[in-house]
Length: 368
Image (cartoon, rainbow, N blue to C red):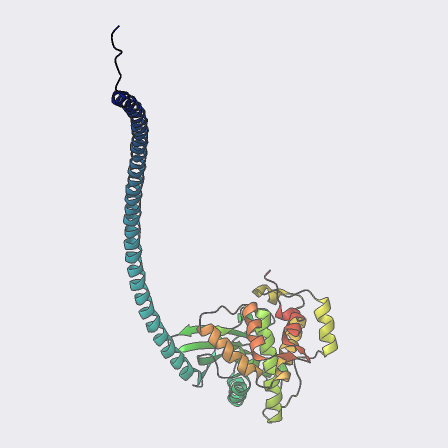
């Protein structure tokens, strides 16, 4: 038998080491492949995320560019609108400047006209007489001249200066020449560059007749209003009746006339009863055809007389305010007249002026 072979220990150790190393390398390689796979997955995810962000950024960029384009379009439109409005504003400013210049010119003209009107109002009118009848009127003319001359200053003191009254012509006529049958007189007012001309047609005159003297004073007082006569005849007649009674009373006190009668005969109680029982008079000329025209004259005069009794300067103050309204172009309607009354006096017979006025049918005529 041969001698047994002896295995070296070193070889065994090397074998074990080699096997271990191979195992370690195999495991390490497996881990490496796993790590590589994981890294690839992470890389792919990163690329995908980056692509998504890039797509989002591109969309946001596109949206922003679209918004900028839209804003630019809006800005362009706004600039065009601003340009148009600026042009319109310039045109309006030019028109305003032109209108302002015209207004200043008109104001200057109005001031000049007002000054001329005041000068004209302070000038006494010219008086003349005409004869349009075959009868002898020499005595009548002398009597009328005396009454008118004596009454004029008293009328002006009570009523204020006339409204540009240039001339008063007393024309003696026959009864048939009057438009209203049975009238005591007739007045016609016309306008000219010199002012107003008033013609008073008289069918006759008796200085001892209350009616005749009252008529001539009444018609001259009408002339003081001139073209500023109140639109409603019942209101114009009412203030004239009240002022005429006041002037006649003063003329009697001065010894100019011999009769002390008054046209207005109503008491307060009677006036209140009539205001509660009569229909409102017409604001038109049909007032003169009313069967109650005489009663309306009396009642209208009584109403206006209450203002004078409240303030002895009422007629003068009222007419000054009235003329200012007329110069400014206002139509002297009943509403405007009531407005001027309220501006002139605050109370009547212990009650507010508005309450008193509302209770007077002749101060609230109907339009029919």
